[in-house]
Length: 125
Image (cartoon, rainbow, N blue to C red; front, side):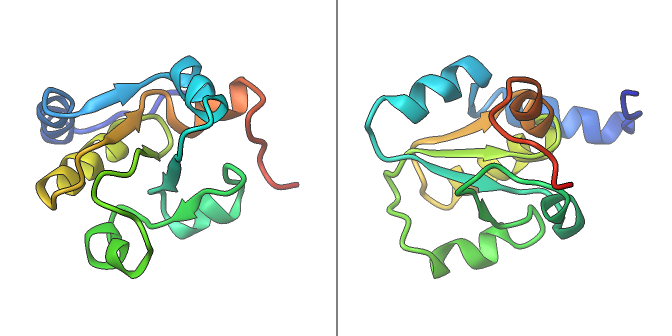
């Protein structure tokens, strides 16, 4: 069942999506296999992360990513892919990281649902 989002939230997401790079699940799969450094960050809430996450993903929820990202050894030019449930919150978070000076940030369109659908992740049992 699709979530019903408010018009203002959807407008904010649309604005962010116009300013950022996005990747889909196929592009993420290619990135995972190209041998180049890749940082994957889960920006979902703690309870979502606890229910299942992409193996090796760093958890920095959208609410704290700006505050806490510099606690991790992530270079400003590192290739970073953010994901949330479907690609909306990660788009907003990606825009924020770009404003902070991170230059190679992507939001995964389809998010967690696409990871699970493609067999790249599974919910915790």
